[in-house]
Amino acid sequence: MVTVYAASRRPAPTSWPVSQEEWRLLARCKSVPAEVFYPPDREKPRARREREALAKQICRTCPVQDPCRRFAVGTQEPHGVWGGTTPQDRRHLAGGAVHRDDA
Figure (spheres, rainbow, N blue to C red):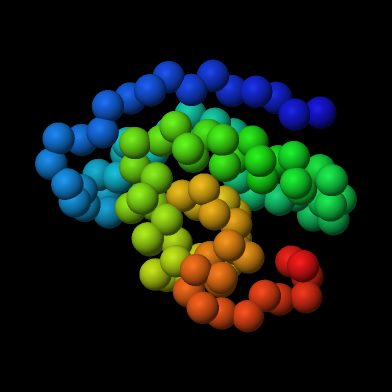
């Protein structure tokens, strides 16, 4: 079962780029349980797709999606949905190979 979280549009900061600390404070995911963005142990493929779709939907409404994504790609974050990207998405963006577990 997937719970839908209401996402109100928050205006983006007026001066870009924001610092790493600032974008984290403005992130929409702060008000959503971490389980939406990080997989539980032994998550079934269908449940993973549904959870990731919900996380990406939340990210699309986030005013700091771009700096979040850049951070995750730049640091090679191996876990969770960041900036609307999964670990597999980030490896693709960084030009890396897709790991067999993610295929």
